[in-house]
Image 1 (cartoon, rainbow, N blue to C red):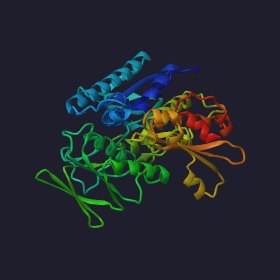
Image 2 (image 1 turned 180 degrees about the vertical axis):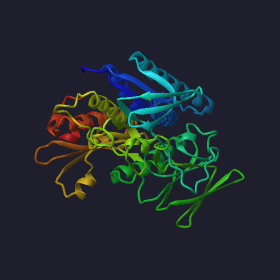
Image 3 (image 1 turned 60 degrees about the horizontal axis):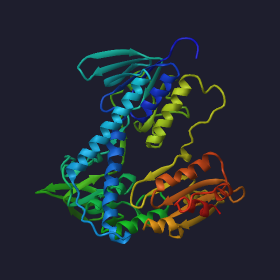
Image 4 (image 1 turned 120 degrees about the vertical axis):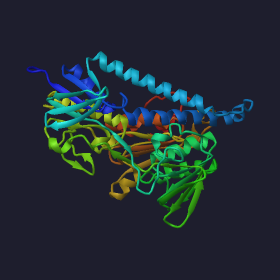
Length: 456
């Protein structure tokens, strides 16, 4: 880039903000990143990573409890809650340090504090040390993330009535946890706490867990939950919560009353768009989210939004890609032909036991649109590696175009689904066909071989 060196001011150091900062700095921009909580992102390092660490611990406990099935002597497993808490803290600190070192190595200026737009090109910073700064910018990127949604009827106290932010891990291990919300976050909490030995009740507002996901996928997960003793309360919505003498009572809209030791709310999130000075800068919002175009540009030409604040898919991988695309666009690299982000091709995973992952066109959506597709499904029970692992649950499903054979989507339920889905994701992005997959020479024995069989 020729001419004046562009000044970037990024408010929010999550995956979107940090990716934008590093890419812009590498391209010669002068970058300042403002973060008030944790470099790397609160939603990422205080929600996503701790939850996966707890799930991994729960998975290890479940595996050891089945040791006899693998030809081993039975081992008594006991959760060390303090050790788990220290493990999570260590992971968070390591990742924050790694992100910080990367940013500093690229020459990014880090400011601990809260940023606020005071105009279309100016940002005021209330620094953590009590001082204040006024910054001018050619490019402003908003990446302030989101927070758990708390309805008026939920008296959250962080002790008995919890949001996700209170549960990594909670103050004490619940004896009976009631989870409200059967989306991705809710089912992951059901998975981890039932693995830890807690009794768990899941309030499901619709007729299946994971509404909007493939019914066959939901059915496998529901069967797994029931097998481990989880109580599913189907077709009910929580409408009030009471706490008395260490007992939490949840009243549902159909008259059912549930009691437990703790309640966890997993009913969505809210964008952190307050106190950002969006009105002063002329930035349009919709439902609290910053309205952006395909370049993540807001209603103001040089102000962008990434991550949860953009109202797109709330995934760390999506936020990072948005941050990179913002840097490229703001630095003028999108003047010629280039590839925009296609959110319909974003792979996602749910870290339950078994794992669930999907990408691209869903079977149910294709049928709803009246679109002709070919669906092939192969269970992991045909895989030698699944039998060796003593876990043959689940399946691989591939959706393709019957005329061209192009891979359009896929779902995987089973061990390592989050890793295996990458093969189908790459096939969709590269416009590969089922023949390309079927003729690939996969490792044997390996779970990936089922991908080739599903493509045949």
